[in-house]
Image 1 (cartoon, rainbow over the protein chains, first blue to last red):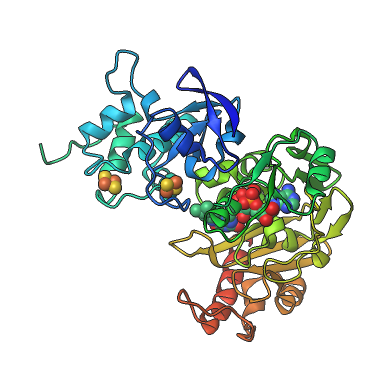
Image 2 (image 1 turned 120 degrees about the vertical axis):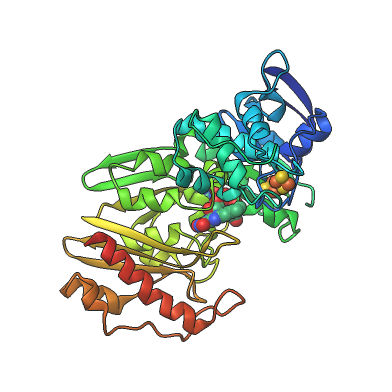
Length: 161
Length: 262
Ligand SMILES: Cc1cc2nc3c(=O)[nH]c(=O)nc-3n(C[C@H](O)[C@H](O)[C@H](O)COP(=O)(O)OP(=O)(O)OC[C@H]3O[C@@H](n4cnc5c(N)ncnc54)[C@H](O)[C@@H]3O)c2cc1C
Ligand code: FES
Ligand code: FES
């Protein structure tokens, strides 16, 4: 075990980690930040997506020790300072971008990464960027709409209310 | 995963000495190795993380070539060579998905030499030179079959030098579940000839389709490929496609690449 320190959602944290401790284990089990999910544990589904130094990564496919000193943002860091939902989170709620919600933390984190690199993406660019994030429920349409809305594009309201 | 120590050298020299210890293995972006470790298909005593070696992360252009550090991520390559070598930038920008591209490295991809990986096609198709901590190896000598390369135990891919062709295009038929190519073809047109590299198809890993190179060298058009068909001997056959289907795709993807470039 060695001590690993990093900044998570703006707060300095440290904890013990083995060489094989994954970043997602460090966050969930070490820091109690269970918003980041493990869907597949095989690098396919993206439920574990977090930002490391401003870039989206699959936290099940990175060792905690390699994130030593890094700035990490998780879904818990996406809310506004007053605890209300951030823009992307609110859009997911408004446009029914989730059903069971299991994929949602990863979807929000990859959406934030996309909008940082490309603030006004086309529908095709959004779908392309979601390549590594799997949702078993929604069929993606409402996720795409939520991201368009979060980008400030005008999106037709969803039928079900 | 079996337990291991993770060490984080800051220079190539330190990494090389950490790897000299036999039981140690290099860790690039981990996008292949971490899933392998999780399946307990590897049991290194020590992992030597290359992510903290700044001298392995660079893109340098000089005299008709571009050299890329072995620790450079796919995302960095896609951005940095977009103007210098757009065919290669496009290949890098279509590997896996955005999160994989933010961690996976060119050195890791070339060291691994997965028979369906993208970079081996880009490197062989460009006639690149693989630079290690010990020597330089021409791509034609480097790729030696499925998951096999000319690298010695513990040798580190520190960089790759690509001659920049007049134009190039990578045609990829993605396998929808894994996002690796089912078959993909890299075509590069140089002043003195054409190179065609095929990945995803052969049981021997990436290879050059020399008949197509000769035909395209004489007449760079899809018509020149009309009479050619790749042999299905030695092609991969699995649940995703038969050997005959893969052989057929080689012709289709080569034509698509040439059509994009014409
Ligand atoms: C969901 C998913 C989709 C993917 N899709 C594609 C795709 O479409 N096309 C594609 O080509 N790849 C794809 N990949 C693989 C990805 O590109 C990997 O990043 C790459 O194959 C390995 O690079 P790495 O830096 O992650 O290496 P690692 O996984 O860290 O290492 C791989 C191997 O190389 C060795 N190694 C690593 N770096 C070096 C070095 N500098 N010198 C010597 N040895 C080294 C390691 O010891 C190990 O044996 C995908 C991966 C995932 C998880
Ligand atoms: S849990 Fe990390 S990609 Fe699925
Ligand atoms: S909402 Fe259930 S997996 Fe996406």
